[in-house]
Amino acid sequence: MKQGRFAWIVPALYILFLLTPIYWLIAMSFKTNVEITTRFTLLPETFNFNNYVKVFTDERWRSVFANSLIYVGLNTVISVAVALPAAYAFSRYKFFGDKHLFFWLLTNRMAPAAVFTLPFFQLYSAFGLFDTHIAVALAHCLFNVPLAVWILEGFMSGVPREIDETAYIDGHSFQSFFIRIFMPLIASGIGVAAFFCFMFSWVEYLIADSLARSAVIPITTRLQALSQASGTDWGVLAAAGTLTLIPGAIVIWFVRNYIAKGFALGRV
Amino acid sequence: MKPVNHRAWFLVAPMLVLVAFTAVIPLMTVVNYSVQYVATNAQFHWVGDLWFREVLHSEKFWNALWRNLVFSGFILAIEIPLGVLIALNMPRKGWGVPVCLVLMALPLLVPWYVVGMIWQMFGRVDIGLMGVMLRDLGYNYEGDPIDAWFTLILMDVWHWTSLVALLAYAGLVSIPDAYYQAARIDGASKWSVFRFIQLPKMARVLTIAVLLRFMDSFMIFTEPFAVIAGGDPVFLSTELKQTVELGQKAAMSLIYFLIILLFSWIFYTVMTRDDGEPQSPGGAS
Image (cartoon, rainbow over all chains, first blue to last red; front, side):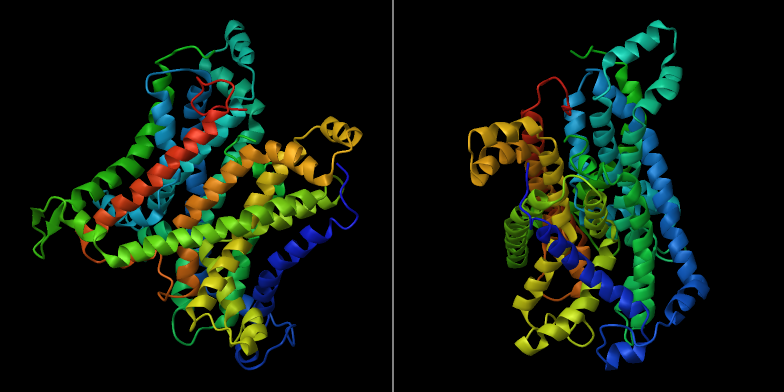
């Protein structure tokens, strides 16, 4: 399809719109608080790294970044591990109640987090897990496991069933077939599912905030506490905010060609 | 045809146990609370449908629901056409493709609280780039409800239009060149190419985009919470967070969840409708 000569203007303007607020955040992170609150400057007057130094040298900032990355990592591993066999079952077999189960999974992806904050607190307290990394990681399974099952099922269904049959005839057991033959075939699907689990666990705020209150505070909770306190240190907030963009920016690069397929739950 | 194999339940079991723990038990707790009154001495008293009647007669609930629907309406009316427009004009090959994809996906990976924080820093009339620019026009999102709405909608457009654009783009690149060649031979106009070739090919991904955007904007909490701490506009999730009475909170949760469930069902029906193989629960393509 031939596009007009000036077609590039539309995405260019859109990307400009996307980058402007991000630019402002980054610019602010290099300014002093005096400059932020008293003068309006498009470019920082001098690039000072004090805000970043404060973030990196403060043990409390370091620990909240670590907390977030730990529960996100745990959640990604758990979600993909339990979703893999389940997605295989859905993509290869018919069994009692399969369709209802599949629909029920989707409803969890659609469940509003606000509904679950109250019972989650009580559930995880009852198991003595309140305020631990694993509590947040398990709670995020609420929406990430269904997502991973849907995405993986989409990718698995693209692999012809004859491959399974041939492998079984060749004498492979289920485990050996699944790990040695099938998983490499859907490697990109596993990558995409992991990416989306990472993403939704990383961006989520409400559940993480309600389950990790003191020992394992997530990064966003600390940002919230500081941004709504009086005498806000805007420079440090902007620096910490800028740092939260980095993990996302890194992982996007690896899955750039599959992002749409993932959002369509493996069904483009 | 997929073989029937009930032993497939063993493969599903670990997932089922996990989701039961994270979803079913909490939901049952909510149901339990919704029909009881918890006295100060932690005694539970059965109250039947009292809380449900209270919620359904509460003006705050209906106002919040109405605001949510208006908000979602605005979001869909802006983001879907804009996303399609961007997708139609995105480059199809060369260095522009990865650059577009990566930069556009960037807002999707920003923690939701940070999205709100970015827009707070961007929109405030004392320190924000947009706030200062628009200050002379009387813009102040912290004081004026209209400006607050404008800011929230603009923020959501910033945050999520890329999702629509990426989905639509994925639909567009799957159209074989032969279709366009045939259209050229027939002398089809740009509009008829869009109407009869591109739009039908995008229909499926756009349905997904519409439903995802509808549901996520319907559940929105974090971003407005970060931008306008507690002020107007108040959405359903905000209302839910602010409700103190346990039973009322639970009843409102369930009503909220049932509305979502209804839309999930529509979503599922639409997604699986066009599948060539109706036996497939998810229906792959």
